[in-house]
Image (cartoon, rainbow, N blue to C red):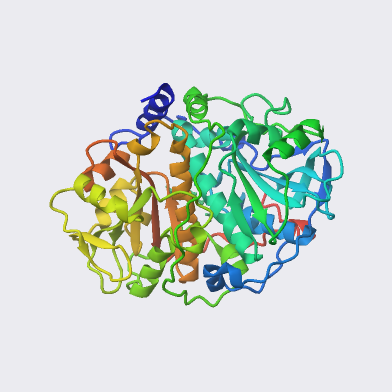
Length: 535
Ligand SMILES: Cc1cc2nc3c(=O)[nH]c(=O)nc-3n(C[C@H](O)[C@H](O)[C@H](O)COP(=O)(O)O)c2cc1C
C-alpha cells in the first residue's frame, strides 16, 4: 500500500460513525454563520440565461432509449436549460422565519458544496471561454475569454468543483465523503438533463485534477484562503454528431492565454472549526493524468417505466422525503424491480460510466408486494457474486428470487428496526418500502490507486440519483442517507475486513408531506414575484 492510500484509508476509518460515537464534527452550529450557498465572482461580465421553467416534450420513460429523443439545437436557451435541469433551483421552502432553496441536484444537508462551470468554444451564441453558473440568478459569470477565433472547434463542456468548507462547516471530518457523493449525484443530474435535450455526456476521465484546476481557473489567486474550490470532474456535452471540439491541450492553452476576470466573493463564514484532515485526504486522493479504458456494458432492455410524466416534470419535482408513511400498502413488485433494474450498468443512465461496476446493493426489504421482508443482495456485476458470497455470513441463503434480475434473498425477517438503528436511528430507513446500503469493492480498488476512493463515492451518488428519479417516476420518493454506522452495517452482513465497505445508504417509500412547510416557485424571485420576508 502506498503512502497516499494509507492516508485515504486512515481518513476513511477515522470518519466512520460508530454506535458509541459519531465522526468528529463541530460541537455547536451557529446557523447565522452558515457559508453562503451561492458563490459569486465580482468583476465578471454577466450573461443572463433565458427564463427557466420551460417544459420539454420527452417523457421520463423515453430516457431509457435516449437515442429516440430529437436533439435540441445548441443555443443559449438550451445551454441554460441544461444547467437549470441539472443544477438549477427547483423550489423554495419556507417554515416560519426560515426559507431555503432546493435544487434539481440533491445535497447532503442541502449545503451544496458543488460548483458548476460551463466551457464553450466556437459557439456563436456566446464568446468562447469559461463561465461560472450561479443557480440563484440562473446566469453565467464570464471568468475567462479565450483568445482567437475558435469557429472550427464547436464544443460544450461542464466542469465541477467542490468547496469542502461549505460541507465541513456542518459535518466536520466526514464532510469530504459527502462532497464526493454530491458530485456523483451532480453527474447523474447532468446526464438526465442532457438526455432530456437529446444530448449525451462524456466523462473526460483522463484529465488530472491539476489540469481541471487550470481550465476552470481554480489555481488562480482569486479565492479567499479556506474557501478555495477543489477540481473534480470535466465532461464533454455531445449535442450533435460530428462536432470537433478542442482537445485537452488546446483547451488548456486557451485558458492559459485567455483573459481572466473576477474575484470570488467571500462565503462570509467565520472559520471557527478547522478540519485539516480534509485537506490531507484531498491531496492524497488527487488524480494525475491517466489512460482510461474504453469500457461500456451492452445496453439491455428492462422493465418499462409506467410513468407518463415528462422528464422535465420528474426532474423538477425530485425531493428528499423527510418522513415516510410506515403504514403504506406494499410497493408493487414491478415498481421495485424496475427501480433495481434501472441501477444496473446495462442501462442508458450508466453509459457515461466507463468502468465495470464496483458498487453492489444490499437491500432491506420492508414492504414490497410478493416479497418476504428481509435482506437481499443485488450484485451489479456478475463477477462480484462469488466474492460477495464468500465475504458475507455463512448462513445467508443466496436464493435467487427473480428471473430477470440478479436479486438474491439472503435472510428473511423483519429488518425495520435494524435498518433504522444503523442509519443513525433515522426513522426514514425503517418506515420506507425498502432501504439499502451501497457496498463497494473497496481495498482492492484503492490499494495502489488512492484517488479511486473518490470514484467509488461518485458511483454511489450516480446510483442514488437514478433511485431518486425512479422513485418519483413510481409515484413515491427517495432520500439519500449519508449518516449511518459503517461497521455496524458490515457486522450485519458479515464483512470482517476492508475488502468490502458500505459507502452510502438510500431509502425509498411513500412520503408524508410536512403541511407546515410552504412551497414557493423556484424562480419567482427573477420574475418579480416577491419572496415575502417572514420577519
Ligand atoms: C449524499 C447525501 C446524503 C444525505 N443524507 C441524508 C441523511 O442522512 N438523512 C436525511 O434525512 N437526508 C439526507 N439527505 C437528503 C438531503 O438532506 C437533501 O438532499 C437536501 O436537504 C436537499 O433536499 P432535496 O433533496 O429535497 O432537494 C442526503 C442527501 C445526499 C445527497
